Length: 338
Ligand SMILES: [Zn+2]
Ligand SMILES: [Zn+2]
Image (cartoon, rainbow, N blue to C red; front, side, top):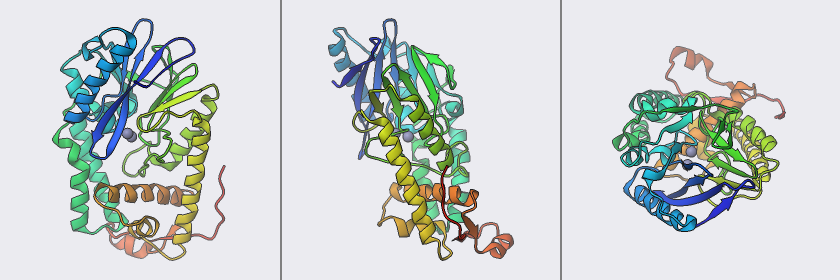
């Protein structure tokens, strides 16, 4: 069992989970002097629930006592993505421990059906303007709504805010990858959810689909993490290995986004739709990855457009037909960053 101890003696034990076919990750059990805290719950699929229960058993071996879901005092969700909170309905069958999440993600957990319906509508508008054809659009939206088939809303008892202390951890609000994303920091250990990962650059979507996402918020949140994490020796994410170099990794991800923005500008020497930009940047993608590539490209295009590096090349057409795909073209102006 992989585990770390904070300088002041709290223990964090990693619970490895099979989240979805092809996606693995972690929930974390935090053990302080007077409380057991479960951070994230997995996806809610049978393998994930199974691994969570087995992980707690194994954590009990590390601690020298039995640990089950019934022993958990509080559940904290790092952010409102299904691979992190989807296990809540299952966990709820075994414990009445209160659920905590940042205020901007409360509705995702507690009014899931409503939130998915609205986000799906805004995704449809995004895909249409991006230049995705109707048949393809229908397929992509079906994939997007997949979680609706197995998740049921749960009530949320506790709301997290920036700057709050929770069980000895400082709560840091880092919007971008998800609106209500939080990191938890205690002494030299940080739980970073999906805000920074060691191998993968965390996925981004445009704010036109969900507010408080987008590249602008994300880059600001990377800066926040870097200024907060100076004393951090180990950072544990929701996927992949533990990081001993989280500040360097945050800088590396930032740098990679800068290169991606330049790449988009190069592609947009000629007028291009988001679909065309996405095809030019990524090798052939399949299934859900198509949606990830399109929304990530959308986040980069949105960032550049809002900051005056791109213009709409087919304005007359867009004025005449609000559903017409938008063609973006580079404005001749060098890309600079704060
Ligand atoms: Zn996530
Ligand atoms: Zn995740």
